[in-house]
Length: 330
Ligand code: BYC
Image (cartoon, rainbow, N blue to C red; front, side, top):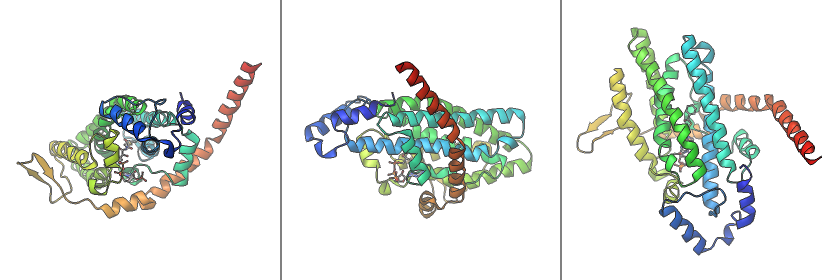
């Protein structure tokens, strides 16, 4: 499975943009417009392939780095039950990452290359994971808001034009849905608890609200990839459309919890049926994705160490594969 994309690059010159003809591009777009799924061995424009490698690998990196803020609370979860649930959630995120690396590999990029791009800082991962988890309520806020935002963004990806990515998203979304509910349930428990617990939940909402809205990416007017990705049906909704859907749903959930969304200008517009909210601090967003958020260097240092610590596992797996290959050849 992993070598399909590599095979394909040689067969149809997908790696050589100059050889793409107008007919090929038109036929490809016609397939997209007809809602056909593009599969790993199909002809595709090089820019489509590169866009998918960028997005899917960054998505995978987000899942892997995203284990850190929650992993921070595994040893401090308030009960054995909470610990078991959190452990299962964090393991799910690892699974999503591996699933997504596999989907990206079908496009002819190796996992080693993707990991190297993450570790060198060339490839991005979601801005949200560069914020610290200071209290147990942050674990509730991550499940509720971060997984909630992730589902909003990922449900449409189940209909992405690239088959392997779309299919991977189906399972990922089911698990994210469980994650969102466990987060909301933590928040609900805290909000029905003591005054101190409710204040902890409010503080977590205050710190995670704006970074969660930033997860959807820059405003449509500043989104470099959206127009092309929507034409290719990789993205089905724009960044702003998904952000608005998220706000509309989540503000009502905050009301149910009895928490205040930290936005003085938040108002419900009866005519449009949508909440209007303040301008996002885009300077903060661009600082974070440039590597200057509160935890960027900590997250990357931990990831680099984990990668180095795992070198012996990769060596052992390679040695075993070589042994099996030699046995098969003999
Ligand atoms: N953070 O043209 P745009 C999870 C970058 S993990 C960082 O709008 P696009 C979970 C963007 O990459 C779920 N960078 O881009 C895990 C581009 O830069 P490059 C993560 C961002 O791709 C553990 C530039 O800004 N979800 O659920 O059309 C625990 C211009 O943006 C961000 C995914 O990865 C950001 N927030 O749209 C708990 C979903 N936003 O690449 C939970 C898959 C934008 O040119 N990805 N940038 O250097 C997508 O849907 C799209 O890639 C995005 C951005 C909507 C994120």
